[in-house]
Length: 262
Image (cartoon, rainbow, N blue to C red; front, top):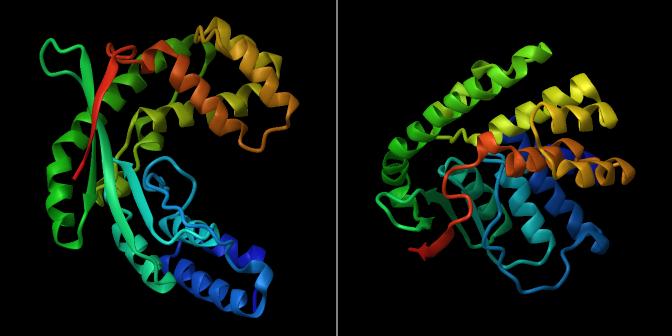
């Protein structure tokens, strides 16, 4: 039987069949090794995100991590997509764990309201296709906004012999399957480009301050470097997304009005 480490890697494999097989083998491994069994807790994580949105975890790995923590139920709530449903269902059936799949979206004020709204939906099997259809217009709106942001960023990057392409940022297969492409995808792609060109030191810090005018990175970036952060790109993505003006909407400082759970 494969080692625990190899099986864990298998939970994030490209092939769905590999992910399912790895999950079954991990459960079998647990039955022979008490140290691998989940801890005893009674919690329900209500907002796991999968790699169908922005997390690096497949729905299968989300399910296993919830199981490992001793959770007795699991909900995956991605942004503007319910693409994780089928895989989550299969993984949770293997784990014999109750589950729910959902999505959340943030809507801009439609008129002159001072507040935006976050909508969160739980998805039942019968309604998955209908909800995917409901989300179609919202995803297309997001996609158009992503294209506009890419063009605006490329104007800034032009003097530095850098650019990002729609083809690399927008995963057409993902979109076709009902996935969502958002501003965070652009921010992550930009972070990867910058690290590749400028590394993780002072040269990158200077570029962020001078070219992108990201001021907060002056204190955040050195900390990331000092800790030898494995997730440097992900954290840099967050710094860029939260502090680079191109990514910020007009409602950045406005209060979120409500969370709706259906």
